[in-house]
Length: 362
Image (tube, rainbow, N blue to C red; front, top):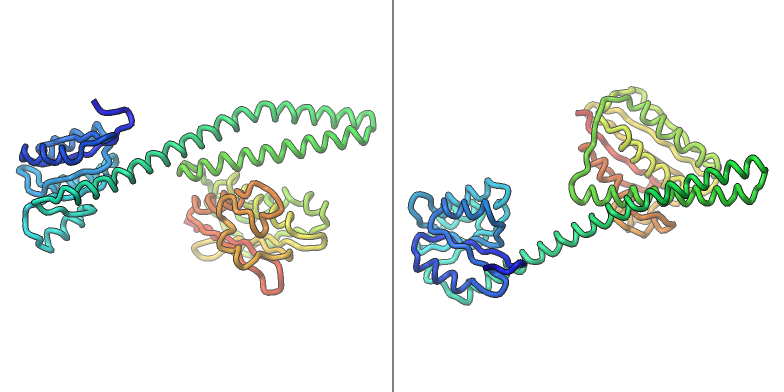
């Protein structure tokens, strides 16, 4: 009976003696060998088991190794299983090419050198184990993120309510110290909520589960709403934040909440890194097949060496050096790409930075 953490290797050959010899070579600690005497038996085993490696004999009746490999590549469960062909035929380039064309990683010619077979198999077994370990680590990370974010929301809501009550008391009794404490609580709650949202979005992006719900909307309306949300923060810092509406106000398919999140990250970053007196211009250019959005500021700009790293997760250099989770621009890129677009950053010749992204109309 295989060990709980054993990995499986599939061998397929219509000659019983060959199966016995291969099984003796491959069986070892943590490796369970599955034997099949035909392509049809192999397919049945692949429906029940995840295998780390498949060794297929080329010459078999009813279904040869090439045909079996093609069927394996057409099934999601076995699509990425490494395949090594075993054959007694001559090394004809045409046959070898066909084998690689069906997805083989290698060819072994009979009589097989036991040491070579064992070395190749051990290599693929090690790669499979690392893949399993990585998958488990990613699952644990996602589970922790989900639990932590869920468990944090309730106490954060309590703190938010307490801050709101303190603000009301401070206003009614005209107590500046109480108002200051209430403001600190509310700002801390907002920051924690943003961090939780960023962590959840990162986990969703890395698992490939980010979903968007697009609807047709006006470009000008999207820009106006995005800029209006950040006007109070810009005015508080005495930064000139303005919106340049497109001359041709086209329609676009987009997820409104997600695109507002994109603008929030871009405009919020620009305000954070600009000093008093700077200006930020948010604009859109409607083209034939796409819409090009820009957030341009007159701030300190971005170090040239940081431009290519700006959208990496947890990047802490350049403009991210002043705090934050380091996930905002990574998530922004994920949302833009989920819309079929692309995003990039560039420095302006006269100072400042420009963050631009393009979305296709279709």
